[in-house]
Image 1 (cartoon, one colour):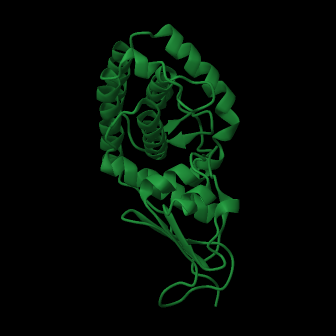
Image 2 (cartoon, rainbow, N blue to C red):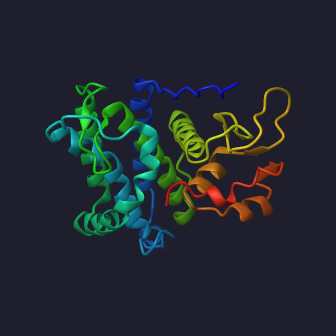
Length: 264
């Protein structure tokens, strides 16, 4: 019997819009409370400071506004599940742009206010199927906003850890981020021999091998959403997470170390 075809996950565009705005609002409030000493700390992301990381978080949503201001491309080029694997090539440009943005905008409160106003105004009238000329490839607005939940959640976590902050994660944004990265693993390692559980948001099957049909799968990986996100983006090493009991893995095909990270 041929393997069952997996359905592509769908996201509620209205909820994703709310999640993006909510998480950006959380970050804006959190950044406002940071001291100069916290802003000067290393962000643990290359040579960035916390100030530069905070500036970068405005770029995450400003790209939406900027792309809505540009002419609409003629055709879609990038599917949502292709996006996690298309980001590494832009790392150098992003780093340069971030340092320039932080240097030119010493008043972070003013920068956040301006960016929040722009994206709120533009999302109010933009249709979900509007194509954006993103640098990774033309995508629909609905798909691109899902990618913004990943960027916002990942970098909010970076900010919290580097600055010792406690900026909350919007539940819908965290769920979308977790699910997209879990589905990306299934794309990278297609199969059904291993079940990866990330309660309460995602369960995916992946890795070639004997197909599981009923009962407890022979190969199971389970972890929490933040640990999964850190693994998928290279913030945490697989063996470190195992040693710290943040991941449980049972079965001969439950070692995901060779498949991670999914994003650099």
